[in-house]
Structure formats: C-alpha cells, structure tokens
Image (cartoon, rainbow, N blue to C red):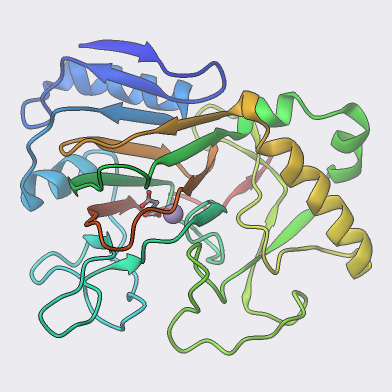
Amino acid sequence: MEVRKLNPAVGAEIVDLDINNITEAEFGCLVEAWDSHGGLLFRDQRLSNDALVDFAARFGELEAAPVMENGRTPVPGYPEIYVVSNVLGTDGKPIGSLGAGEAVWHTDMSYLETPPDASMLYALEVPPTGGDTWLAGMSAAYEGLPDQLKVEIRGKRIKHDGTFNSGGFKRAGVEVREDPRESIGAYHPIVCAHPRTGQPALYLGRRRLAYVEGLELAASEALLDQLWAHATKPEYVFSHSWRVGDLLMWDNRATLHRRDPFDADARRIMHRTQIKGATAPLAA
Ligand code: OGA
Ligand code: MN
C-alpha cells in the first residue's frame, strides 16, 4: 500500500489496499497515516455491511447510528450504519438523511459532550455530477491563524448547537430556539489537542447557532465569522468527487467537512459508520 497526500493541509489517499484484507502491519501504517493526515480516501473497494462495520471497529468502539430525520433506524440488523441518501423508499419517504441539498461545513455531532472521533462514508450509489464531499484541515487552519486571533480565542469555548443537522433539517424532538445561548448543545474548547498526537486544531462544529462563551452575542458572532472565514479558505480545503466503492474517513477532531448539492432526481446512497469519542474534546 502507498500513502499519497491529497492536499498540503488535509487528506491522503491509500493506494493499493483492499479493505477486506488488511494485515496488522498494514493497519499500523493506516493508523499512522490517519493521525498525520486527518482524512483518508480508499478507492475501488467492495464492502459488505459486515465488512464496513468490521473495518470501522478496528479503529475503536462504534457509535450507534443517530435517529434519522424520518425517525427510523437506517439499516435493519446494523445499528451502527447510518444512511446518507436522498433516495425514496417504497413508502415514499427518504431511506436516509441529508437529502440532495448542500450540507454546510461542520464536524459530526459536536453538540454531544463526547462527539465521535471519526466518521467513515462508503459510496454505494453516486450521482453523475455534484454531491462532492469537502474536507478542511483544522490543524493547518489553526497554525495559519493571525496571531491576534490566536490570542483572542485562547482559553475560550464554543457552544455547539444540536438543533439542526448540516443539511439544515431539524433533529427529531428538538425545539427551535433562535438565540444560540438558549438552544441545546455542548461547550467545547475552540482549540483542541488531538487525543493521540497532541496537535492543536480549531474545533468549530458548525456555524449556525454557535456561540462563544462569555461574549456579548454581537461580539461572539463577529469572532465566529472571522474564524469560519479563515478555516474554510481554499488553502485548507480538499474536495472529493465520488465513485462507487470509495470510502472516505475523516477525523472529526482535526477536520471540517461539507457536501455539494446534487440533482434531486439522481440517486446517492452512502453508508456511514462512526467511531466513538475516546474522550470529550481536550483543550490544547
Ligand atoms: C456525514 C456527512 C456528507 C456527504 O455523513 O456526516 O456530512 O457527503 N456527509 O454525504
Ligand atoms: Mn457530517
């Protein structure tokens, strides 16, 4: 297997590796690549649901899939697999989450006290165009912050909202509060240390209904706008155009991700697994 860097700030492709046959030594190399690059891409895979779950479980304990927008459990018999899809089932309801629109920049489930460390997306069906997934490298973004912003955020925490998902859909059973100080969510340090490497990274979650603890709302909004504009600059970002059989995994502590919209009449079906957070996000 070969590790090929995708972008200076984030991501590497693992070339010539069949996920169905990974030796212990190869897995050791993968973990190393994983810690250094924040995102890993594997192409031309053929994974059953069992193989996807087994591969994810090598990285740590798995998270149960969250309840979908439609209130259903996604894949019978596989409580760890979440479906991201716009396809309608025989009952006329989507079989998965996030629809066909844009999914704005975010990290997964940061409204929890202990969000998942990693997420893995495996492509079963992809649209002919659109639906690209983007990663942004938050260690590089932290390093590249102007000194004055680094000082301004030192020791501060952000409130990560749990009302809406990245597709803009309200989560089941949550009441909408438009004031970010009142909506549901969790506080995390703005600059987190990677649990294994200690590498500092910006931990922003998502922009909507975010709040910087202790600031006037207007000051919080202004600071967040500056951080988000910086963190999603082209130099920190990489976009992936999907083929069936691609698997992309990202470290939620080291990256942000988003998705382009695609034609709602086209089909896109992705299976996602998540690795539980070993700890709550740690202040750097
Ligand atoms: C996710 C997600 C983006 C995509 O599954 O957490 O943000 O490309 N998916 O489907
Ligand atoms: Mn996501």
